[in-house]
Image (cartoon, rainbow, N blue to C red; front, side, top):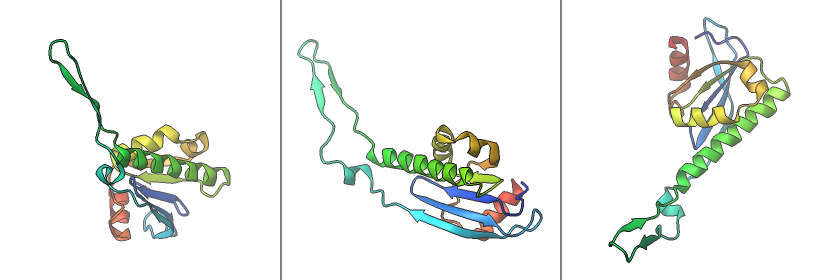
Length: 146
């Protein structure tokens, strides 16, 4: 994948995001961190106060239970929506002409739900992998290989 000079690369998952800018050129990218954010998102068991309830029927002895709310996933989805909002604000300020998004499949899907038309029009590519914990050099290699 070509990464034009001055392109923005968003590397995100449900808890962490990195905004990188290519200060190199197409052939030799040089990604530099502009912004890094991380949110604390404990497991659902640490966020929930009660177990899911249950209901039983007196006729036929059937029993059903209610599913527990996945607070951890709700927070990851909210974080992805906030990242999409950051992209929108930056696109509306003409902060970038070209954007590449790298995120795990679930986060990428959530981001897509919230892309503004200005973000979509500048989107040069997407990679559905989790690179938030990887060194910048590995991200550059993955982008060049894509």
